[in-house]
View (cartoon, rainbow, N blue to C red):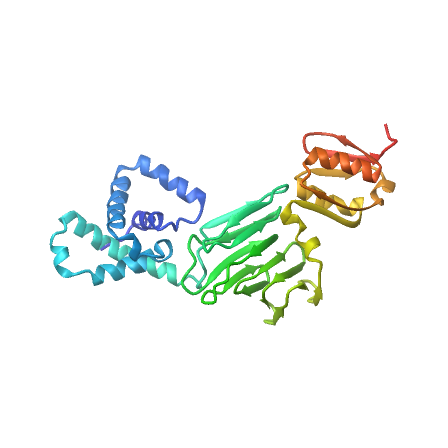
Length: 328
């Protein structure tokens, strides 16, 4: 029996495996425009809905495998009472699901990240993972994770900076994948900063193991220890760190610790989603050591003008110039 692309798409739609929002939107449009596709999808949906939910604990990730198992294990007499149309649907679905199941379980053993969280400049996003773990995604960062974790592991992928508070589960280790390294834990609190060439894993509590992709080195951390790895030079440093300073961002605190105003522009702009520039070299070299807690943009500007003795002029809704306080 021939299996069409439409058959595959119907199954992927039901199992939550259409890869992107664009794919899902296009499929919905095609359902409205193509009567044959709509009817075919309804047939597959009928089959999907006929299966008891409790017996499919991982429906979205293992739909193909589980449906095939349940079809083969179903008592023979029950099939006698199925309509001819439903028999045909099951026959086509079986063929499609075999092919689809092979596709799912042989793709480099990569997990299917159906959820994609992106925090833009000026944003921090709080996420609860399927296992109840709590995650905070910093500005200019992203997190990918599956709809449901598997029986033996909990894998996510990230870039930028993310803080993790992981629920302990000895039977399902938690793994964070990032560019060039991997962090494995059971239950713990830790921060991962993968921005730039230096990657930093900071352990607040529990225990983690960091695996470096290039060398294969496995490095374990204890609470209040962090690992810094420079991808360019290959330098690896394990050191103690200040938890309150490293994780301040997740509590909506902008920490500018002993920086010149010029050095502070990057964290300021990232935190507020703005573009601050400095118009004067003297101002650029002024040092600042302050914490701005739960301050909106207007409050931040007023505070910065006061403590740094500068004048901040608004150029547009998100663009500002920092100048000497006596400049007119």
